[in-house]
Amino acid sequence: MDTTAMSEGAGDLQIARPGSWQRDATHFPRPVSRFHTEVFPDPFVRGFKDTMSRYGLLIDHLEYEYPGGFAYNTVVPVADAEVPQRFATAAEVFERKLWREDLRHWDEEVKPNSIRSQRALQDEDPAAMSTEALLDHLERCRSNLQERVFDHHRFNAAALISLGDFIVQAGRWSGLGMPELLGLMRGASPVSAGACEERDALLACLRDSAEARTLLDSGAEHGDIVDALQQLPAPVGPAAREYVALVGHRLVDGLDITEPCVLEKPELLLASLRHEPEDEAAAEAELAAATARVRSSVPEQQRAAFDELLEEARLTHRLRDERGVFNDVWAWGLMRRAVLAAGGRLAADGRLQQADHLIHAGAAEMRSLLSSGDGPSAEDLAQRAGRHEACRGRATPPFLGDPPQPPPPLDGLPEPAARAMAAVGTAIGALFGDSQAPNEGRLVRGLPASPGVYEGTARVLAGAQDLARIQQGDVLVTASTTAAFNLVLPLLGAIVTNSGGLLSHAAIIAREYGIPSVVGTREATAIIPDGARVRVDADAGEVAVLA
Figure (cartoon, rainbow, N blue to C red):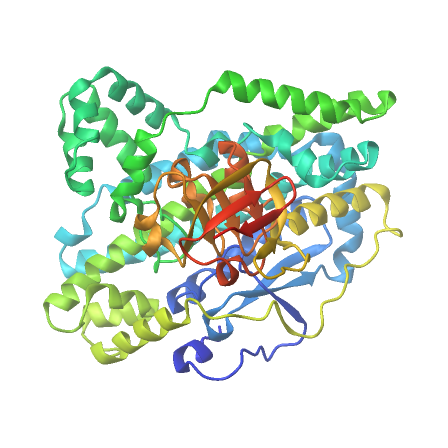
């Protein structure tokens, strides 16, 4: 993978391989580490190939390249020889409702296995290990990470096809746009709003314990409060330990070892616990009213089909974020913990200037430095860290290589294959597609991801390192968010992003919380000053700088 430009910090970004390469700022808004470029692509491609083949789709996989450390991808079509088999497979997808089989497999096998294996790794203490044991732990964390990346992406089609099919068919019947249709997904992905049994149990304990509430609202250091909650007598202490064990080592933002974990930002965990969940009855009433409005736009003879497609889309919608939360978001966090433990050991021996500089080594370099001391010098790794930080806010072109081409027409395909490709193509477009509306002066335009109008203070964040600056009621303005970002959402009045479409994580999370959101603005972080008063009109997809 090409990381030369990032390493040297010079020259325009280029990709030597042919094709049109699209910048994936939705998942990777900042440059990735060389460790990421070594461990991510192979399991990602294997998982993508698996899901495309299973659903009879005419895409083989997405290929990633990393000029300057920035992620760009291109679509690799299926080989001509495989097309007949893909057609035959696609003919069964909708009849079998194949996504239901995959959802059951996820719920009964893959997710529980992921939780078990990662809890086992988490229960180990890398800082207390011998060097030999730490080397083994690093390797097992790397292996776990690659397995979790594979598990995430082999459910891509299951997470997208029924929702994409609903958007296509319901849109044709009703004449409504994607924002109205996706609004009917609210409440179908509780994990996107941070919901889990462990959190519910802890919140119930906090409501019943005056001692815990006093501690939670005290002025003590955030990390000390988290530690103290876990030491309280039952039932609060055990409930707090279970919740922290589930979420504490997940990344806060991003998908790389360069990003911090929840326990490195304890103020976010406390903000989540202090947030009162929304009135579920009111949210359900709003959803029922929205569903009735959309359904009334559908011709009567199509309403039974509409109801069925809506049920299938809502059924699988949680897969969109659950795959990340229980797979790679957690696995990257465990990998980061292990690397920081190794870095701390090397720093204590004088072989690194700072423990976190080891993050900028490759996998083989990490092992070599820890086992024999051979590898990049402390000065080299410090320079890499500095260059990486300098690149974080760099502007990058949306495409490299050949000019982008529209997808091939679906007219000549058999009906099931055309339907499957339309569904997945629509969903992927809604995931990556930014708004093309022009931004003018102090007015930023994007996609209306979650309805409502809100005025507040803009907090422009470059990444997770800035999250501590968020105050209750702020408008988050950032490049993009990931599934790990849900802990900070209770603080926010609205969300505005540069990148990502109506199925981006920011859009899904905003809908689950009922927070106004405008996504895919392309330039919000450059146009909106930090601290400015802004008006977010998420109904119109506009953000105005007021003062």
